[in-house]
Amino acid sequence: MIIIPAVLLPLSGFTEEIVAVDRNTGFYALGPSLMYLIDDSENLTLNDIQKPEMQAAFVQSHEESPNFSYLSAPVWVKFTLQNINSSYSYFLEVDAYKEVQ
Image (cartoon, rainbow, N blue to C red; front, side, top):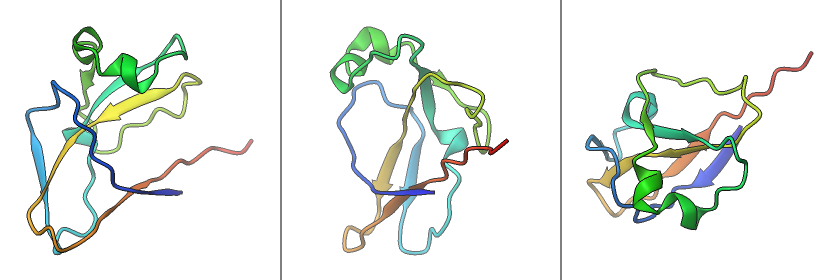
């Protein structure tokens, strides 16, 4: 499991759905609210994905918990959060499970 302090980056063309969070939100599966881009080139940078032509390449997720474990390529994800109560800090938890064989 990876816990990352939530950082919001201004990327144009974000998903239209906004996830509102407050101190009562608790666990929230972002799957249906996120968009993703599979980086088959394994060379994209943050500057690259901020370009309008790359923003158009993102795909809307329809899964509650998208599973990209079968991929070896990097996967970029984006979503929009609205902090209803700015007096609280939030953490983004990413469950990066890798199956051991």
